[in-house]
Image (cartoon, rainbow, N blue to C red):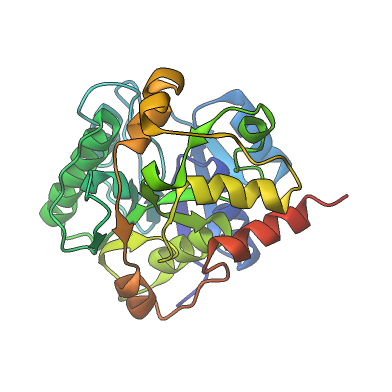
Length: 293
């Protein structure tokens, strides 16, 4: 991988800021695009050059020639189409990047009834948010095909890491669905995701679609209990799925409606890497350690 690249990070949030810091320490030139004053202020404190970008409206042309781009911005909050992606692609149509990396989601596969799946699985989005992600994938694939731009799509599982675990929910004593009714979920530690994004951006050879997960699925029940145990918190009360339909939020229930186990074999092979946090146990131990005073 060659260094000293010019990198643009669209949606420079939790992962984007960590990625920017890593790239800057390797002497790459980085610009982060953010959508709020607070995010821009945070970039300033981290010595990340940033610009405001409102993807919810038509944009002025952006010059990305000779730059590599990673797009981390989420789609809009409603609808089945990613209008933010449409606005963005229109803005770079005349001055495109030399490589494009898109962060998507494993949610585009929909419910797989707990089966093991890989990148050959057909997309079957069920939740509205997953339709928006699938639409973003389709838009960027067409764009990169038209302009012969190397493209990497990273379908990312649930991200966890320092500051990104459900501590408040566990402390609140809210119930979770019991083990036998709990669907399989997949995760990736933030630290590993940043390394994968970095390699996708800087590699001269990696293109295509990759599932980004640690390859060790577990149930949501196991996830919450592992966090509670590591942080010496009371285990959340467990309830049946029937009870959950009455008690849990619509958002939580939508996640409970899908179950899949996702392989990361293609990722590990093509990226020629091993993960720092290959299991939930490794990741939770690191987070617990980082929280010690």
